[in-house]
Length: 423
Image (cartoon, rainbow, N blue to C red; front, side, top):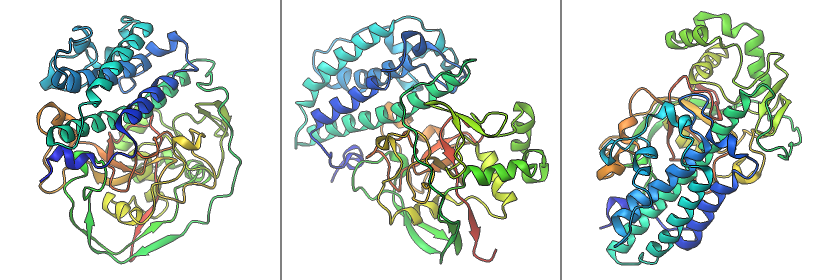
């Protein structure tokens, strides 16, 4: 019988050494348009500096793989264990998250040297993977580390976008980012779903995180779910109709957030409601593109205004499971929601659901420090599904569960509507 770690790993799509090199190289490539000064800035507690992402993902491999599984390995710099631990309390003390932007040292060049050192030793460790039980378990941990790094690639892009957005000149992170052609959004329709007992969660075919398990039965009531995401044009109508000034539309915490933060529009929209900040700089808002950078509170208020609701994560997964995980993901090259899109279930924006991020029945986290990866966050957060325009291809699937606090807006988060069958 496979161990939990082996079951979560699944088959690799490419030889592990090549896959490791590809993922690690991409992370550094994402910094090609940045200056050293850009990589240390932290604009809010949710945002981590680019340099920190480069170091933390490297620390992950050193701490949980090299130090534990490569005989004779000597830690590169013992001070890094404190500086670049994120939230693994069982692994030791850590630097405070809101103060990561104060870490001017180690330098960017020193972090790149750290990555090179760890990568060289990781390739030695990868040679030890094989078909025996120990080799399979080791490969499973490496695959987990690669998926962890892909999550941080997405965070690196969303975090540096926020950093550049607060600059008075709002420079482009990627000045040569292409502009997609505008395409009309598909007509909004609601697909009827009969309800019943359905199977939810990952059944072990390929890699998954522990929070996607175990596969279990869930009851769906008859409902209808939108064939596409809510667009900028539709969200603009909500704004024009006074949606941000109508307390009856908002959850209590959402209305508090609107007033405390002065929300009047999605994050990155300009005051004129005609332009928005993108990774390619300021651009006109495409009315047919899916709306992005809205909180759960905003999505919920819009749904109430539109006479609908947000789908549950189980309704979403059941509908999405019949479609291949393709769409406007990172490899499409737009790095922004595109018009005419949003009709599939993957890419463009992470979709808010109405479901709290909670454990599945009989959920068991991974053993040891890696058990802190997902399980301890299953409180006071909301599940999102589907990936976004900066999610790596091959990293997303119908069972994938991510999560954010309901007031979060800096991620590429949007939504689609659902309705009860009787409404």
